[in-house]
Amino acid sequence: MTSYRRIWQAYVLPRWPMVVGLLVILLLGTGLQLLNPFLIARFIDLATGGGSLRQLALVATGYLLLATLLQLISILETFLATDLGLKATNALRADLAYHCLNLDLSFHNSRTPGELIERVDGDVAKLSNFFSRFLVDLVGNGLLLLGVLITLFAVNWRVGFALSLFVLLTVGVIHSMRNLGVPLFHASQEAQAKLFGFLEERLSGSEDIRTNGAIPYVLSRFFEHSKRLYRKQIAAHFVGMGIYSTSMILFGVGSALSLGLGAFLYGQGLASLGLVFMIFRYTELLTRPIEVIGRQVQDLQQAGSALLRVQELLCIETKVNDTGAAKLSSGPLSLSFDRVSFRYPDAREDQEATLRELSFKLEPGQTLGLLGRTGSGKTTLSRLLFRFFDVTTGNIFLNGRPLPDYRLSSLNKQIALVTQDVQLFHASLRNNLSLFKKELPDETMLEALKAVGLWDWYQRLESGLDTILEPHSSLSSGQAQLLSFARVFLKNPGLIILDEASSRLDPATEQQLDAVIAKLLQNRTAVIIAHRLKTVQRVDDIMILEEGRCVEIGPREHLEKSDSRFAALLKSGLEDNLV
Ligand SMILES: Nc1ncnc2c1ncn2[C@@H]1O[C@H](COP(=O)(O)OP(=O)(O)OP(=O)(O)O)[C@@H](O)[C@H]1O
Ligand SMILES: [Mg+2]
Image 1 (cartoon, helix red, strand yellow):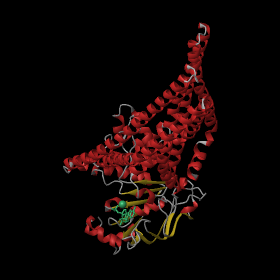
Image 2: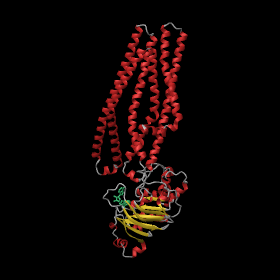
Image 3: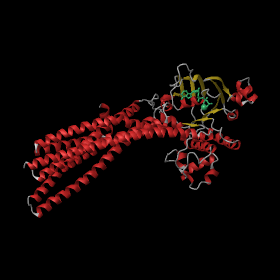
Image 4: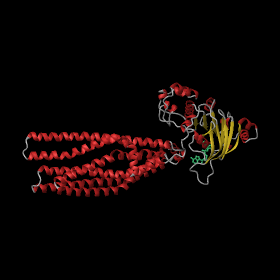
């Protein structure tokens, strides 16, 4: 209950004018609905009791006006409730998305994108009804139910008593049937989530699946998932229909009961024809609140599990705090590692630390070439600079201050990372270059495209910077790589990390890129992570990593000439030694 209250307070209460508006409209609607059967009863009594045509017309007009007003109220109520629901859920969605984006990488590594979509969108959608309708429906329909029963008691206590019993019985039966259905609904939803998860994974790997001829296998799994979903949905649907039919039958019984009672009272001369009709109409009015309240109670149970998962997610704290206030100045940064060791938070107990006792220093504008076999920890080192993770022991200093002293946003602004994985967005070329920053002038972007040698490509585009890029088809891997270099030019950072950035390019493009990189590195500090010796021809210092340890470090020119591992590598020309 506390979690329901807390989330309601956070997302619905700030929109209290809408809630008040909804309640007012609801009370008005309920009152008017209760008035409705009175008018019909009056009409019938007038008609059977010889009322004048004028009187009849007056009551009929009143009835029509009332019906129209009720419709208008219902439209307004639906609008307000939907609006409130959407605003509250969108705010919660935004908060969740922001929260997830700020969580460190150990969180993201342990969850699939599908799972996160389900949390941020699916679960929140399940809360929409709770936000917008729950209280309103419960209060509104509770009042209606109470109003009808009180009126019936006032009209005739026997009728009131009989129909109260009927309400209790119906609510009990429908509620227990719904409870029977809940596990089946859950099973059907789960089967659906599984099918979507399966599809997401297979679609993203479609190239591998096709080239390996695994289509028949994937299709057969797809059919299995579909078959399961079909079975679960049929079962859930049958129960749903069962609940619906049972309530219809019960409501029929209720109507028969009220008609029977009415006929009895009429026969005894205790009620007029109008009154009999009024009792009948009130019985009909009872069905809606019974339906709605039952549905809301069931919905609350479903919302409960969604709410629990949402709160769990909100309670996960990032292991990397952003309490530093310092800002990095522009211009080349100095970087130093002081006995840095790092273990991935989710690493097995028996696993060695990924980086061990790493120390080095880069003066502003210097370039470090980082070599090492695959898995030696090169990429891990770059992740630490962005504080995707914090070091386990030791310190990293930028411009002489430890990394946590700086605001994360400042680190992101002053450090750039280029990897083989270039993330292109389904958006215009302009947004892909500026990464959605509005203030970058077009000319600057065109300059950047020229600088990285994408000018010819750009000129062939029909809509220029407004061309929408398709993430998987607009650019070759090499071109995408060049585009990511253009992004770095635009970002203008003081420290660059290139993680095997040029490995996808053909020799001609690579040469062209060499010049680009040289320009990029001017007046910037850089770490160039490379598998190939060619990539580090121009760096100032070389560091060789082996299983997370630095096994050699020194000025490149010095290492080249001395009896070093680097010199041996150069001599043998065996790049395989590294890869
Ligand atoms: N998210 C992670 N969680 C746990 N262990 C990880 C994670 N990422 C990498 N590792 C482990 O850390 C070690 C170093 O990985 P890293 O990616 O830094 O190597 P690398 O030197 O960049 O390799 P490559 O040259 O292949 O890119 C590997 O043994 C890897 O299994
Ligand atoms: Mg790597």
